Image 1 (cartoon, rainbow, N blue to C red):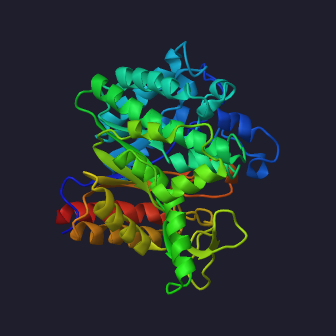
Image 2: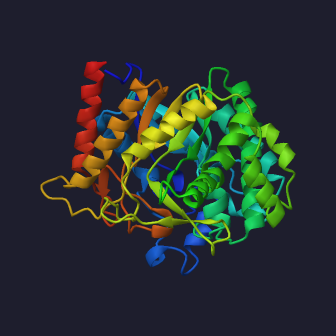
Length: 446
């Protein structure tokens, strides 16, 4: 009976991955529109122009959520849908779409959890330097002010940013995501401004929505040394955690950057465009920490990689279609670490899920046993964490339905529901039926 009676069971999506609608209805171009329309950037040349056509099919999708039995839905607002140029003129059609969506959720007794930024920066702002521009903090403040004023009467649960690590490093250091840069100075400048914009937006949301609960979502990858008894590998695993996890956790909870990583990056010149002491402004009281957990990395020391570490693939273990190792114990260890190191008031698992090469639907269902096992094992890990005193308050399965999977296009599927992208037909997978039953069982026990 570990899951408390008020535990939140939900699913999650993001705007560019499901909405579609292209640039219709007054929507401005975002960096992912530009990136996906650039040849060679996304698998098969796929774009989010249509995606799941959620902008037209949201009533059907809300009905699907109700059938699934969830009580909460995490979605994101598309910044350029409501402010096409990023600042200035408001697109009422865009705002009205989100108002209709929220109204539909409320009619279905599903609580909206709103993410302000899930990677689709207005291209007009990217043309001004994007998150590298110090003005981006002010841009985000104005955006957060508008959305919280317009939607705050019906939305009480707010997430400022989704995965600043991806926004900064995957997008501006590795170049895999929009805008596709490979520049360490740009990456750490972006990270700095995103974190500062979080700290600046939280009090604005609170002022506009006095009964709001506000947090941020950070992706957490559990790391272990390749040779547990090897000192160099131990240090390498710790370095990985500092750069991937703690570089974002410490600003939010302590108003500082990790000391060793800060010193090293400063020596490398990666922080040349920022004042690291400003990061104290990122530390503001939050009501919850959202974490996205998918996998673990096994790390060994590297003499060739500038970071000093490299990932090792462990054979003989289960891996998803994205070659991510299935390691539910990593979620348990991550939750215990966060609880003991940072003391968040409560934690939501804002994303957790897996991509597999699913078969086509047969007799109205998709057989996806590996995804069923993935969900079972990770929900069990959360149950153990709660029994050990970690204040986990909710779980959002990623994702409600197959969608545009960023640089992988439509080649990878995470959904509880299968989507035929030609007909837009939605079909439940056995993982959806499992999740539905698990929610029912846990509520009955509570």
